[in-house]
Amino acid sequence: MRILLINPPHTAIGSRIPDDHLPPLGLLALGGPLLDAGHQVHLLDADRLDLPIEQLLAEVAARSPEAVLMGHSGSTSAQPTIAALARGLRERLPDLHVVVGGVFPTYHWSEVLDAEPAIDVVVRGEGEQTVVRLIHALEQGLPLAAIPGLAFRGEQGPEATGSAPVITDLDAQRVGWELIDHADYSYYGGRRAVVLQFSRGCPHTCTYCGQFDFWTRWRHRDPVLFAKEIASLYRMHGVELINLADENPTASRRHWRAFLEALIAEDVPVALVGSTRADDIVRDADILHLYREAGVVRFLLGMESTDPETLKFINKGGSTTHDREAIRLLRQHGILSMATWVVGFQQETPASLLHGLRQLLAYDPDQVQTLFVTPHRWTPFFDEVAETRVIQTDPRRWDYKHQVLECEALSPAQLFAAVKAVEVLVQARPQALRRILAPSDPESGRGMRWYTRMGRRVWFHEVAEALAGWGHTRAGPTVRQLWGAKPSRRLRRRIYSA
Image (cartoon, rainbow, N blue to C red; front, side, top):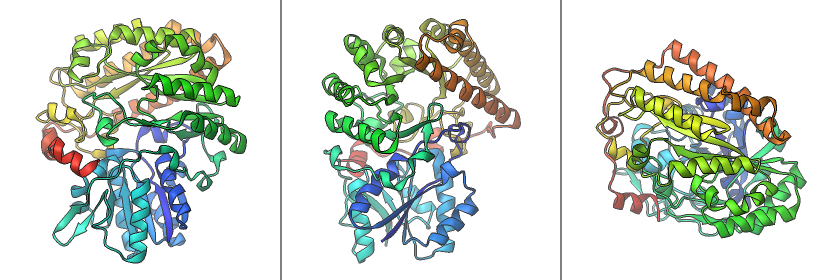
């Protein structure tokens, strides 16, 4: 079958501002098994090309595929674009099979199929095995009901098949690297880059995150084989940087250390960036030299808040003491730290924001990333704020970079102004400026300069967008009214995962 994988143009600020673009790992992970099954597969990365929808539709029509697969790299905020693409594709290619997958459609499959007649099938959960069976069934005209991990439009309306299979052998799933030109993709200041996963899932149950539910359990690649793949990407394609997409790659000290040692043995000058927990960095204090020797140059630390009560509220675990120590340890070993700071909780006050600023300054991270709390329906946090008023009903802005929940003590303008001020104060403090202008080593300096350039562009873009108007509503629905009630955990597990 002629299959076209489409990475839709994304409206998120992070996709539009940087000069760098990373390849869509999720779609490439589907492409490998489909190619091996004998199908004609191509990738159209409309996000990298920044194609307007009409131009994208014309490009797809010219290629005349039999099936189009679209991934949800942006989750909720990507759905409006995918829906518009599906409608346009149906008009131009009436016999085309339109398939979507990703986190949002996995948990909203019934609403997606109800609202968008142009979408034929939703692939729920991990898709590498499911999509091969799906394409075979579409090609042979076989019923879809026997394939687990799908949702489609039946005689009585949207219906889902059995639980999506959990992939236990991650090394058996080949990424279709031949679908891209590696010269088209870069990150971290122009380095040729790809996205990879050492592991899937997360053993922790933070309430704002649904990864532990979506992936069902933490699994990892063979450390030696993973290191060999990275070395091969460098030697064959000149890949200089690996962006780890894992939620928690360091969850197992034993297997993470084995990977670091295997990559060191490969002796390739590849840099690694990713995210992990501060607790794991503190745990690994005695092997952090291996992190740096293997090429780790930056880790994002999901701190979320500097307030102990908020950390308890979101079931984050960890502690502010470990957060501060992790940043110190990373700096000691020449690894940049990026601290995430989540704002926009209903109970946010000027005092809580001031406390957050003081704590961030005390933490002294190299970089900071501010996010707005966003209660997606697949997270436990959704239930905790279900009756909170929504001030942003446009799903395209549910991207963690826009305020979506009402704060009782702060207007949207007040919260936004405070956040922008905190970002300037943290990123322009003397210690941060010194690390940009007089870094301890060239690698750290390069990372600081790149992030500063990108952050400056994003900051001014966000301010300009705010002045133009966000589209906030004063009489919005509650979270539950906007998105509907969430199925029980038992039903979610039966439908969405094994």
